[in-house]
Each structure stands twice: as C-alpha cells, then as structure tokens.
Image (cartoon, rainbow, N blue to C red; front, side):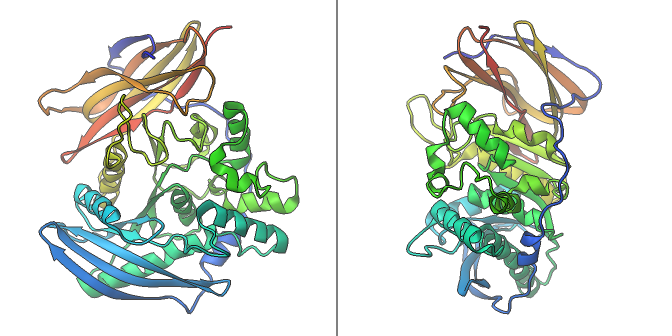
Length: 458
C-alpha cells in the first residue's frame, strides 16, 4: 500500500483551525450510583509502607493498600512509587493503574515514565482484584458483575465501581505516604491506565473527586456505547471477537430493557461528559482489534475542556509498534513518550503544545488544515488503504512533511497552519491523519489530528 496522494503546501496563516465532526448530543443527567458507591465510607481502608529499595537508578517505595470491602470481598493492592535519581516530589503525582502484581516489566515501565516526567510516579496494582466468582478474570469478570446487576438491580455490582474506588483510596494512601515520608502535601493526580484501566481512569474523573487534575486513558476508544456498537457492525460486519465476554452474556447488543439501558449509562464515561472538564490525553492503537478505527469521531466533539489525541500506527491493543517484517518493539515508545510529555506538563504546570485541525471536503478528496504552536521537531502524514472500513490488518505508511536535522528544533511562538490535500483511493477506503512532533525540556513526543476515512468514488 502507498501513502495517499498529497499536495503538501506549507503556509503561515494567522489564527487557528477549528474542529468539527458531529453535533453535540442532547444533554442527560448522569446517574448518581458511581459517586454514591465511591464516596461511601468504608472502614476497611488501610495502608502501610512495606518496603523501600534504592539503586543507582533511583528509589522504589512499596505500599500495601486495602481499598475496600465489596460484596464481602476485601480488596488488597500493591502500590509502587518510582522516584528517579535526582527527581524531587511534586504536588502533582502521576497515578497509573493496572491489573496483577509488580513485575520486572511494570518496574521498567514505571521507572521509564518517571524518568521522562522528571518526578515520582505511582503504579497501583490489582485493578480489579481477581480471579473471582469461579476463576473469572478481566472482561469475563466484568460481564459477570453486569449480569448480577441486571438480576438484582443492586447498583453496587458493576465491577467498574470498586475499581474506581481503589484509585480513590490509592490517592488517599499516597497523600498520607507523601506527608509521612517526604513531609509534603501531594495536592492532585494525573490518573492513567490502559484498556479497562483506561475505562477506570475516565470514571475516576467522573466520580467527582477534585484531586483528579487530568486523565490519560489508553486504548479504551468506546465512549458513547450505543453508537459504538453500531460502529462495530458497520466496520466489522459483526461485534469484535475481542468483546465476546459481553456478547456471550447477551450484554451486547444492549438489551432493550430499562435496567440494561441504566447499566450502560452508569458505566459510560460519555454520559458524564459535562463534568469531565479536566485535561485529557487519549492514546489509541491504529490496529486495535477491539474498536473501529474512527471510533473517536463519535465522541470527540462532545468532550469538554482541554483534550489531545495520539494514534499509534501499526500497533494493536498493547500500543507496541511493529515494523514491516512484523517485529514488535519491546516497549510502546511512541505512546510512553506522549504520555510522559502530557504528564510532565501537568506535574510542572507547563503549557501543552497547541494542535487544531479542520477537514474540508473537495471533489477529489479532502483538504486538511492543521494549526499548531510549540517547539517543533517533525510533521508527517500517516495513511493506510483497506478494501472495507475494517483497518485492523492494515499497514500504515508515513510521509514526512518536514523534520529538523541534527537534533535541532524550531520554536513556533504564534499559531501557524499546515495545508495538506489528500486524494481519494482508486478502490476501497483510505484512512489518514497528520502527526506533529513536539519537544518540551528535551522530551520529544507526537500528537495527532483526528483521522478521517475516505471512500473511493463509486
């Protein structure tokens, strides 16, 4: 496959470009059950410092946490706090949540993010506590709790609620830990995680806890669930096999009952969009088998406040890029760099680079005007072709528009625009987005425009 025909015109234009895909959806008051559960007092809460290890790379603290008792099950967790050598505690802390227990891999990832941010980063494990209910884990466990809600109408059953409460209790523990260990107050948090832990990140902000300063949900491109289920049918012809735990329990398609509709409203971050005004960094894999490629376009315009997106080309649900020979990188470099850049800006109150865009229909394709402001490293177009709207197996190709050489950088002090013309494919479909690479304090990271899918003329 080749990159789309693109007439690349570099023009300096005063002002910024607008956005636009869909009209805002009608407003709806979110149900109270998430906040009710998360903020209900629970005497089970407890924490203690379990260990401290110092090496040439820095210091790692280990904390034991008991977050809650949920349906007579006590939830326990490990927290690791990574402090790179030379870094000082800050009033904002990054809080990553994931499943399982600490491992060599999670330790490398935690230290990498902490080094790039330049500040302590906390990793919370055991989200969710599992296995439960006869050995169920992950999506099978979530689906089981959804079914139990539908059977009992007890709004404390959906597993996302105790997952969110675990993060809220982790923030409590980390604030107390910082006070005891560093004699300082941690004021707020950047909450992040991948897949269902990205889902938890959205809902932690939706719970109303004001300590959530920003969120960075990874690979959970499914806000506005009813619309997304229709998107899957359009793109794939049937629901993705990756969500079989939900289809097999008859949760998808969403049953036409009052309780089923209430369930999805309780756990859909889109329903809470009016209160989700904190800065958001959304990171998606362009070959993620879970979601249609253009899923973001069904909810992006509805999101309030500061927001950013990164698409990782030739990467699936784990965000690790593969080369043309199918070899996968060891760590998701592109995603980690952008996550770290966003977190650095939040921790140290630095302005994020500005990126805006506007697509315009043309007789033989589309025009894309990209506005940007910041310290630039490179600009490129990513594109792929497919016979249908299913791009899960597509190979993404880049066309560099401009780049600096010898490690140089270009500071753009005022808003400028890049104009790109993109031609229609001869057959099938073509997807495209523009990526701008920025630099902040020596850390280089990319941001993306929304992508667009073009169809050949019939």
